[in-house]
Length: 365
Image (cartoon, rainbow, N blue to C red; front, side):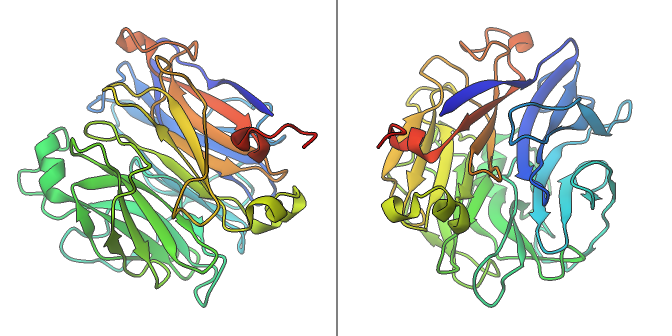
């Protein structure tokens, strides 16, 4: 099963970027992104936070909701997470963080306390994948977000690639009290950010980050203490990275859904999915989703979501209640071709597929 379609269409003055998608406690799907106003550029003068909701595992979508909008304000998208223990959805975003206790229908301010770390403070989740809630080990229930920290802001320019390489590091933010208090892990992998992470069945956290270099490699790390600290690991040669990098998406496929779909006997129960532009060119194209049966150690299966010459930009993934994989990504309004101009760059598409599609297994096998 595979299908893809536009869920948030670019319109006059409205350009969409930085997707984040989560499954709410009741099974609803919440899709967030930036609405850049009058310009698609990173240094846009006005930017809003918007959301759409699906109640049927991503098949159909409701109206676009504006969560944060103010004329002249520049509010960028951060990372969302679902807390299955409290039933809350937490959203890090510009204009003030938000929380919902009714599966995204209404939102109130979320004002956690910070346990600040120095240097760099708490860090930020802009461009990072959605957070996770740990399912295993003595820290079960902990919330963990991938994040980026700028060690020094003295003269820092986020539009400068050299500044990103020298002053930016990956880190993680975590909470043991359902988002009331936030802590930060150590800083690691200089020159990285906009990361994604997933929990392995043994409780380790596998971390995978965008790198702002020209070596065409993503940077990986591992935590063996539930996200309190990370240590750098060797680059994964199976995962390509564009020059100066791009956001990617990653998610653990739940054990209970592997059993429910009958796939656990075939591929085990330590399944992680990863998607990014898989290209040797300078274009964000050829979106590929990969499947690992050993917690991200190796990638046994892969399949293209878009071809070469088809725009595949920032992305985010979630798993629907019925086991369907939902991959939200930025593309052109037609989902074909590369953006020839700024007015043909910034719609949000959704790819819906299942494990058998990635593995190229027919339904009868």
